[in-house]
Image: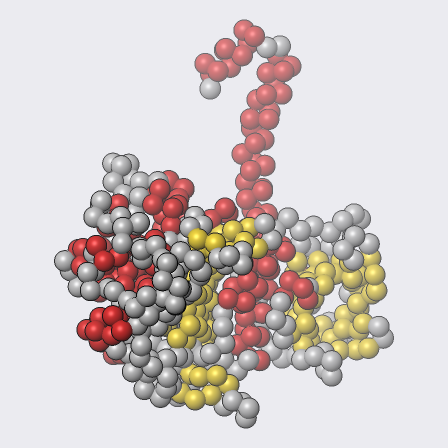
Length: 507
């Protein structure tokens, strides 16, 4: 620092040097303040997401939900709701095991691309180069390019969705053995010529797993465990259902809700020969590690010795690049990864949909954010993942326009209030120096959010999109000073006894 100062004195006036040094001293403080503001805003958004997901589990009568939010190398927040066993006594947690069904395809794709990195497979080689027995009856339109690994990974190879067995049918879910899948394959016809249309195919990713086994000369599950899962430290991710943990850490699975509000407890399944496409189990915490590995690899590349960390960084980028666009221009796929474009952001990941389980892992590489939601019922999870992203994005950079809000003890108002008979309840939580007001239940939380600016004396004003103020919302207190309800448009609403997390740690 002294040498820099001496150099500056030779070329700059002392007044300018003083200004430079002052800015240099202020910069870390300003950066630190900005980081703390980010933490606070993130904590407020996560608190809303927590309350919203809790309402989803309660109002949709879903036995268990586990969820988490990742930022870069860290799991910022994770929580479980409900119970995971048939007796409804074991609470769901971020360590709860769920079938992740088609998220299995990501691990199978990583295993295949590891062989690609080693020069052992080529993506545009006919699949029969590696699996001579993998032949099909021709498609109705016989003019077709060869079926390739790229086509299988991007679901554009024209294959049927499934092997010719009724394994999605209850009550027993009779998945075929590996040999049965192989024996049936030559009898099946292609749906379309290869590289013509998108057709999601569990059979296709099963053949990717078969390729891993054939090329590596190692049983698929063993290769995936020793070359992908173990190196990534995913000790709670398995290419099978650990039945010794069923109802203990592995959630039992339920079907769709019936008209009378009940759900059938489903028999557990074994994916057998379809394991590479649908046979894995995992937890929120392990999927968070998997997401952080991807962010780290994309950010930093290979390790300091130049050795790939499971995959080359360039290979992961290629997997997350669009490889096929359906002619309808609505479906885009990478190599194993689903790729979506929403609100000028790109999301990559996968969902899983199996008897008794629904799961989603979605990553936004541009800001290294990932959201994971898992349940043990038939309600699909992608919309909930989108909902959590929308809450995080709504809070990012939000501020009330001038004049500044009055200072208020916002925690005194935080909680659930009755909204009967119009809807079940209204949630109020701190938000950027004011409050956010959210009706519950609601499918899309970002669309239902209303923001309130404090005016003092328990009075708030709804804020319009242009920043101007609308009607008053006045909170009510009892003789002891405790907030007991609120009034809007002359109608009082009592506070409910539903517990609300006091805060989410600012991480």
